View 1: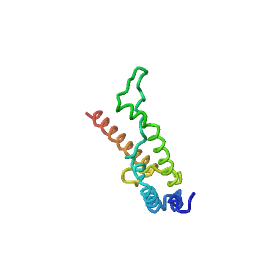
View 2: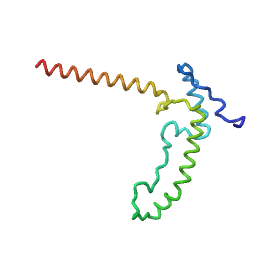
View 3: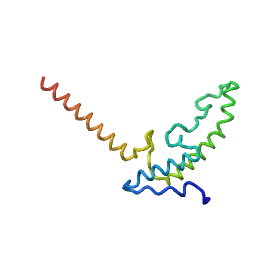
View 4: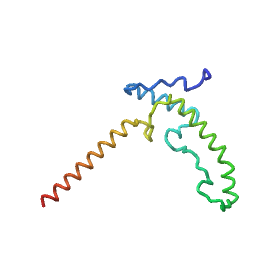
Length: 132
């Protein structure tokens, strides 16, 4: 990597998450400096193949044919940019959401809490109906 590569300035995320705020700020800075923040916020989604799902009889319009012709280059560029973002993030398994604060672990814990609440409410509801 080049000496001025922004990826070199991003620390490794500690397993216990103790440096999360610093890590997050450095990843955002490095990725933003390359204009690729959309890869973290999901605003820059992987391009979809415009010919996907079309059968052999599909005759694209001029506009559709232009999209089909541009697709390989757009996909290649997206994959290249996505690879850079992954490199900057040091391949840490982190899901950066809109607010860029929730880790995959936090999402799983939140989902488990909501599931417990739903089950608790269902049990209360069943108990109320049995009492009637």
